[in-house]
Image 1 (cartoon, rainbow, N blue to C red):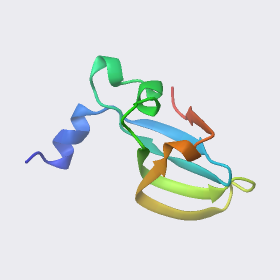
Image 2: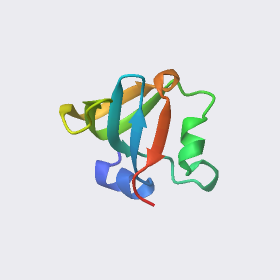
Image 3: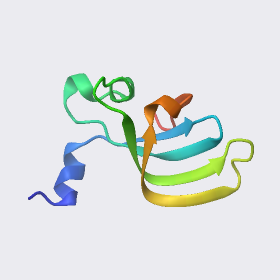
Length: 90
């Protein structure tokens, strides 16, 4: 079994802000480290995926992002509930 450290070395990390109809979610997504699937758009457009796994999550109400409602080490967001996603780091 691989350690989480070796797994992290094999994946890219993209810090993102995800907005649903009610919430703003800031966190990290981990697209696979293979060339044709390493872009954020590829991760969002996977036909077989229903949820987007996000780590190091902060959730706030969309109208007031200064107040963090809760934090979590992991959150799976239904792709159908996502309205916008943008990378925070280039």
